[in-house]
Length: 456
Image (cartoon, rainbow, N blue to C red):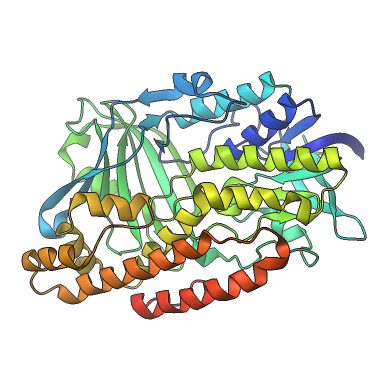
């Protein structure tokens, strides 16, 4: 077996993996990114292509390097179609937006990491994780172009995506790494890149549309006026959708897709759950989808993944310099994630939980009567200014749905409590158990208010 020695082994060449690699390589460390796809396919990932938070990226691979993949920078709002109510909501979306060519973007972030000095090994499928007698991760074994290979490293960065194989292979008994993870906390998604004959009238909007069940949605995101990313997804604890057929049916019923040509098809799983309580273990950190760094209401995760990669690499660099890659030494990574976006995503998960427990028609009727600004806050900020006065105003417009309005108001209250609790995330692993106990008490209130089955 061939053995390679590096300071960093990064598993996966997605956003978080490339930013971790670029950050470490820029600091002078020997870095290898192992990627299961071949060089031509690397970076080809199923994605909605909508990028929120396009204003900036970590400096290791700056935004200027990525801008050639930004195909539509004129999108400035969401368009929520509700056929049940014959209504279209125009929803403001805070922050800078763009729609990208994800495959081109994928090649650019790989190029950016290479420019910083990272090495890439393609056609490399990880088989197992190596640990010493104390449980510290020391590397991985893999098959590279059909031949067995071993990678020894000071730190392994798990950027292997949703339901990462590395987490099945690692013994986390000596750390607080979050193992309360199962398929029901994930979404299955499918998308097609579709070329239409004429420009769509909504080329400046991200279009959302409900599916036949509440815990899912269709999307139409314009890469350009004529090239559309069309897709749909559903929560895996729901009865499976026939995604290809359902998307095909919806496309057939939209006049703007008459004569359209499908240019690419791809599916994936993504986390629609709160971020991992802890994504650290001695010698090991998980980033991006592998640590559930995704907005659970929209599935968006590019910007957060980029910063997660940066934070993980910086924590590991400090640990290497100090000669300490224990969980305590790496813990600052967890804190930075929670402070930047993790707390907000955990609060947004409350609305995702609500969506699994309500009737889709009732939910759509309620949303049709919500002001766009409050709906935007609920989808992106983790909290919304939905107080009693607004509830009363909405109630006048939605006679017959007052129970749902009150439930939404209660859901907002408990989401705010959860957000506030996450702002007290512990400063060391020793404080995690007590913090989790208080968080779980709040989650019991979430389930009571929403009527949903426990998710965790």
